[in-house]
Length: 285
Length: 322
Image 1 (cartoon, each protein chain N blue to C red):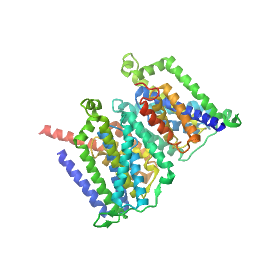
Image 2: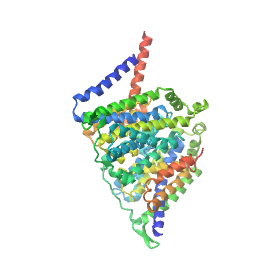
Image 3: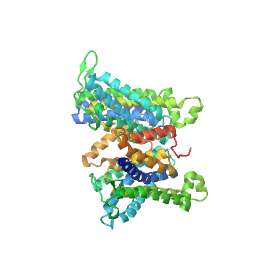
Image 4: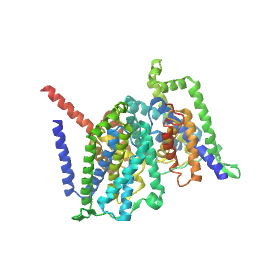
């Protein structure tokens, strides 16, 4: 029973991390139609930047703001320089281009920070554990599990109550129409790519004290994030939230209930959903 | 003129593949063996991508199935080379028929995701099923089987012998793929790539044709995988991982997806680049990425595709100039 509760908490914590990453992925796809293969690498970059910045500037909290901004700027730069020439073409080319960016970022990180794994302490306020039903649980993981819904709320407010959010949704629905009523679509695309990679970077910073920071962390998470957005429905806000929770719980409970199948469970979930509901749980036809 | 130039280049290429290794040391021959095997793997991938318009991110599943089947058959049943390779091909083809049955129901990004998902399922299977596959260690410690041609048995132990065997097999299957793509069936695949809706309006069952293409591509990938397991003396989970699926994608894009031999040239370029760059630095991926990005942006037809279209333009100019 306690293990079950702990696993559910683990699942929620991981799920919320996945949600923040997948949200960036799904916004970029929803508005621009680009499936960003390099998204995991931007996440990894966020974690490394946090590791590098935290000792120089006063700690984790400033890094939580600065690192995602830097990641977002790099994202915006790559959108302007690399993706822009490809908008008229087949989606496969955009996928391949972002794959090229993934290769570059992954090796660049190895060149700069070395191939080894690093770990990072949680910020002092969130260090330590709390007792839950007779066992203990790290405060930082609880913090992530609670932060997820808060971020979801902020994003919801942004998309439904602010002018920029509404413009983004308009462009996602109909690019040409949005452009016709005077929305600067190219600028909006850059902003969206900035925002999406910013979220990836932020997830990276949040993940740094939680998981090992290493060169392979992006490759592992990108596949999970793909599964989340496809299961939830590409481009769907609610889908990313629900999909992330489902995947987080499936992975965490799989460890306990069906350890043999645990690695395969996310893919089985993906295949099942795509076959039964090809547009995902909340996707539009 | 272009056609003549192409025939000469092709003949020169094949001549080179047969003659050069006789005078080369073991290392270049080993490298060339790997190139030939991956060229076949990339060509089989391109039957789906370049000809049918389906971007598969799980093609390594069939490469790996072929490799594991081969290693198991050789280790446990002591089959000789050709029967083992034939059975491995069928195993991979069967796997492709089953997985393809589900994947071809979707296209574009959904197809890519489904193939990725199924590919990783196969990866998990070989990774977890320790008693059969050896888990993360893979299968090693088998001997390369004899090539039994009824009248005479040949050892394929030496790099040269194995190279020539692999070369002949790969050329035969390349011919097979060429025949497919230049048949009425291949024409239907290409028309589905251009506009699947219209093709279905004229009464063609696109799902069925996609399924056949998927199965054939898996079958040939299985041959490449079987050869690779023998070449590497090992079948390991890396053969099935999605990073392996990315290789034929990159090779096809490098060489050109709309030209039949583009992916094969892509495999050659890929390995030569890797070979030269890793002599100087460990960071080969960063160079690969730095090469891939401009190719995708400026030369979407790939190296061979671009060369051919330049050749055509040159010819056009000559014709106009009289």
